[in-house]
Length: 573
Ligand SMILES: Cc1cc2nc3c(=O)[nH]c(=O)nc-3n(C[C@H](O)[C@H](O)[C@H](O)COP(=O)(O)OP(=O)(O)OC[C@H]3O[C@@H](n4cnc5c(N)ncnc54)[C@H](O)[C@@H]3O)c2cc1C
Image (cartoon, rainbow, N blue to C red):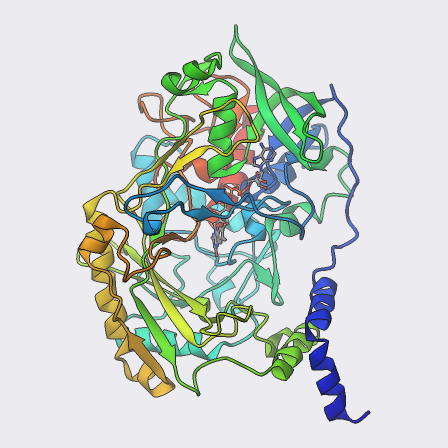
């Protein structure tokens, strides 16, 4: 068989070959411990949820050899079936009047195993703002060491800036090995309209960046890969159990002290049990599940829990303060022959083979145009400080709808402006005591008119970008014919605009708000202890009092690092 016929034969087997290669690439390292859970077991600490924060907490607490730590995860091993696939309640000002789809990771690593890997700490002012609101210990200066503690920065030009970065931590962070030409073009276009190339994970925030990601050599570094796999087989005091849903935190009604959790197996929901915590229970189940679990356990708004017959342990505003980064993409770029990335089947096969041998040469080792991220100031941003209010993310789309393409192959680029500090707040609640029911989620995107004003501003910048020499020379054509107007946001259902017009960029946070005792909306204190309850903390995206000004994975990892130190200090370690 000559080389051409080999290739043709190979192309007809393309799906099979790609599946094989992907499975080899994703092969699970042989590090698993088939841990079994025994009803009635005792541990010093029980961590609920092995996501971005939970894996870090389990790792750091089990550094203390005398402590026994149990990590319970509802999902399975990574990779595997992965998505909680939440649906919100129908919205009037977003999602085309429909439910919004909210994916969340249900797997070891949680949402860090399914996210877009962008490493973005937010803005230094975010944390100073948290501290100003009474959250002692959470100023930028105080959280920076925890970002650095996790970090293994693999790009020397960035790692050399040791005030902000470090090497040697569990989490590898670096630029993708594959150089994406359209991402580079967008980067140049931002420079042309006056934005500097920056590292926004410092105290310079306005500008454009070729992002760093939670990856190494083109492979994802979920918190499972980074924080659990290196220690899972070696630390006898850490037990990781998957496929187990925590259904209730056990709390003594008299002294309001948590003493364990109740669980059910995902594979057999009738098989239930209890495990006990000698010291503490830490809930790291994420922005949707952490408040749901608290409410099922009697911690939540009395008016929601009492009608369900749930005995009240503590009346707190659990589930309120829901924040998110949402977008309404009004502008997109169509790409001409030169710019589009729509290879033949043969080339896709070659790319897949390249990925298994040399990451540097394969677009599979990248996130396409998403590699370039810019943070800019609308006219509503406070110009006295460097605190941009819009972030641009560039997603890709193939006009060949009938084909399922990896997103590195595309002929359109969608400009997604995120409002970094939205005024709109949503909430979630429960209407059943069934722990397997989804909570009722109300995102309320664009409920506050100020958010509409900010996003309308962002389209002007997107259109200006489309007119740059960099983009026009490269074959980008700006298409703004569907530019949403104010009315579209108010009705949410413009037929011109399509049902997916407003959607989430997946940074839900805030539903177990951190705040001092005097803050009536706070659920946890600055030590992340649930107000009025002993032995119970929450540590994940839900504790953010205000959403960070960027993607939320790195902040969740920082929260996991910081709470671990708080716990160690509290127990004299
Ligand atoms: C599609 C997508 C793309 C994203 N892209 C980016 C990005 O590029 N960069 C970025 O910084 N951020 C991104 N994010 C956001 C970021 O990943 C999340 O904010 C972050 O991972 C949340 O961490 P967490 O610890 O709060 O929760 P999670 O990581 O979601 O972890 C919660 C864990 O708890 C488990 N769990 C829940 N309930 C129970 C229960 N009752 N019993 C046992 N286990 C339970 C879950 O299965 C899960 O493993 C993205 C998110 C998504 C979904």
